[in-house]
Amino acid sequence: MSLYLIAPGIDLSIELFVSDQVEKALALQWERLTDRASRDAFCRRMTQQLDSVIPDSIDWDIKEPTPAQVSFAMALSKQLDVAIPPEVLRYRGHMHEFLETHSQQSKARREQKKLA
Image 1 (cartoon, rainbow, N blue to C red):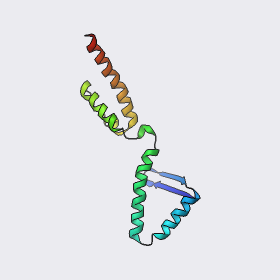
Image 2: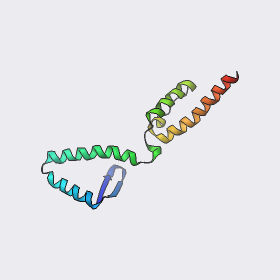
Image 3: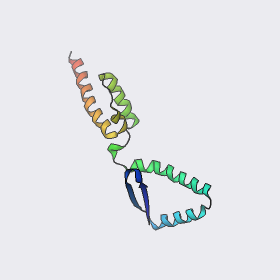
Image 4: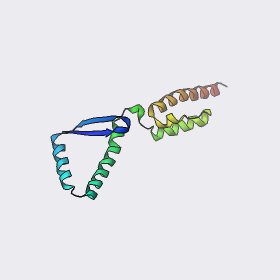
C-alpha cells in the first residue's frame, strides 16, 4: 500500500510504501473512526507523530542546530564580537560552518595571548 504526503504550496508529493501489516492496521483503525471527532483526534495523533519523524528523516545540514551548537556559537559570538547570521540559527549545516570558522579564530586568538 502507498500513502501520500502532499503539500500543494511547494509542489511536493511523496509516495510512502507501508507493509501489509501496517496497511491492514490502518484500514481497521479508519473503520473504527465513525464520527468526525474521532477522525480529527486520529489526525492530530498522526500529525504529532509525523512532526517528530519527518525532522529525523531529513538531511543533517537542514536540521535545526543542537542546543549545544547554539550555546557554543553564542559564546564564540561574544568572545570574538561577531554577529550570528539568522541562517546559522536555523540550519545545522550553516551552524557547522560558523563554528568551524570561528572556533579556529578563537583558538588562534588564545594562542596569540599565550605568546604575548
